[in-house]
Every structure is written in structure tokens, then in C-alpha cells.
Image (cartoon, rainbow, N blue to C red; front, side):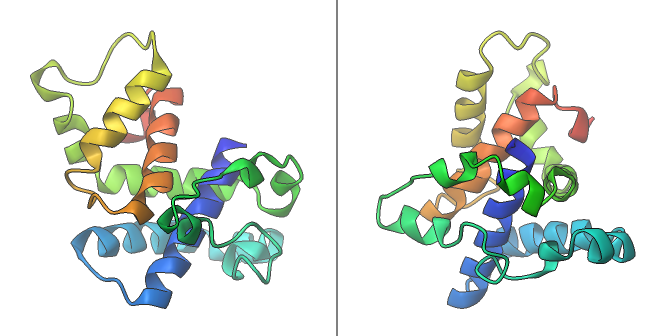
Length: 166
């Protein structure tokens, strides 16, 4: 479910940024990783997961989640719907996660300082929140529209033991 939710949040952020014409280095890094992930195996994805290339509203997937964050209504409960997995495969989320975390792995590693990546993951939830706070100062702008994607990214980093950035 987390990878599917991440894919939906990333697509929602892509649509949000494009509709508002928001550009910055962090946006281009994110957009580049997103586009690379969806082009890695385009023939397979377009054949078996065509919704990956459709707008969220056309795919009948939760949309405008990023817009709701602007109105201080960060309700991501729509992403808990188990039927979403049948509409948008977790594979899409994994590909985006792998590419984006790799694109910003330097700042992720730097956020832990000289001690490096944590060896013991006793409190993953607190660790993910702490990492999200650090990343929202650098390299990700501390703008409301980055919050959901950044938090999901950090949860996935902890759940995968940081394997995507090793």
C-alpha cells in the first residue's frame, strides 16, 4: 500500500506543480526522477499499467491531495483504500521511490552527519519524521506541497533500511 500511495502522491505533486508553473532546482530533480522511473520500462508499463501515464482524475484515483494540504486539510485516508493496489501497481511507486531517493541520496546521507545511516531502527516512525524535517530544509524546499511526498519518502527509506541509497 505504501508504494501505491507514494506513486499517487508523486503523480499528484507532478500535476500540482505543472498546473501552477512551479519550477526550481528541487522541482526539476523530482520531475527528472519521476520521468526516469516511468521511462525505464515504458513498453511493459504502458501495456500492463497504463494508468501510470493517465491523469489521476482520468484514472479515477485520488487527486488534488496536494491542493488540500494548502488548505491545511492534510487528509491522506483516501490512500488507505486497498482497491488502489489493483488500479495502480506498487511497482510504479517502487520505481519512483528508487529513482527519487537515489537522486537526493547525498542530502539524505548528509542529514545523518558523520555517524552515517542509522544501524538500529528502533523507532522508525520518529526517525522518518525527523528525517522529513531535515530534508524539508535542504534539499527539498519547506513548502506545504512537498510535505506528503517527503513524509512518504522517509517512511519508505526507513521501511527499506535505506537500501535504495546504498
